[in-house]
Length: 371
Image (cartoon, rainbow, N blue to C red; front, top):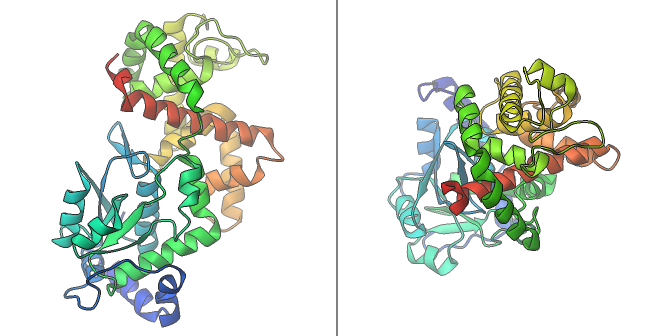
C-alpha cells in the first residue's frame, strides 16, 4: 500500500504514463470500440484525480460476476480485475458496493467514483452520458462459459480520459496474456453442476445445524469465518464425521494422524475435536502466509491445507525464479493450472480451493446462512 502523500510514486506514475508511446495508449480503441455518447469534450481528467489521490475508486453492485463479500473481504471476477489494474498503476483500490446500477452510474457521472463495473445495458450507460468498454476486451464468451454475465463492462466518465484508455489497454493485455481466462476459471460458477446443487443444499440443511455451534466456537477462537470452516468441512467430508479416505485421513475435517496429533486431536471421528483441529490447522496456514493480503491469503492457506505449506512454498520459489511475484494469487493459480496435466496434486489443489470458494458463496448467498 502506498500513502496518498507519496509524491514520489505519483511522479513516477506520471512519468510512466506520459512516456508511453501514443500507439500503446490507443491500442484499446483499435482492439475494441468504446461505447460513448459524450466523448468529444471533457473537463478534469479522472486519471489526474487517481494519480493525485493515489487511489482508484470503483463502484459495483454485488453479483456472481462482479464482487462477492466474505467476512468483510471482497473477491470476485470484477473485483480482482480492477484490483490488478490498480496494482498496475501502483495506486490503492477503494472498492464500493451499491444497491443498484443506477446509483453506480450516477456516482461515475458525478465524479464520486472513477470506474463502475456493471452488467447493465449499453443504452442505460449512454442515457447517463458515460462511456464503456468490455471488461474482457470483447471476449464475453469466457464469462458465459464460466456461468457469469458476458455483458460485464467498465464504465468511465469520458473516452478521452487517459484513465479509460490505460484501463482498456490493461484489460486487452490481460486477455492476450491469458489472465482473463484464468480469472474467469477461478470464479467459475459451474464448478458444481446444476443437478448437484440441490443435493448440496439438502446436505447442508440436514447436517450443518448439527455442527454449527462447533464451527462457530472454533472460528471464534481463531478469529475465523465459521462459514468458511463449514465450506472446508463440506469439501472434505460432506460434513460426515465418520468419513475415511483411502490414504488414511479421517473425520469431518479429514485430518491425517500426524496433523491430528499436532493439533491436539485424540479422536479424529469426534466432530467437535475434528472441527477444532481443522480450525487450528487452517489458522496456522493463514499465519504461514500472513504477509499476503486478504482475500488472497485465504486461497494460499486453502492450497496449503490441501497440499501442505512446504509444497506451496516450493512453488513460490519457482514462480520467483521466473521473475514473477510469488505472493500474487493470479501467479500461483496460473502455475497450478499450467502444470495440472503433469501433476495430479496441482489439479486436486485447484479443484479443492475452487470448490470451497463455491460452497462458501452458496452458503453465504442463500437462506443457508440463517441455518
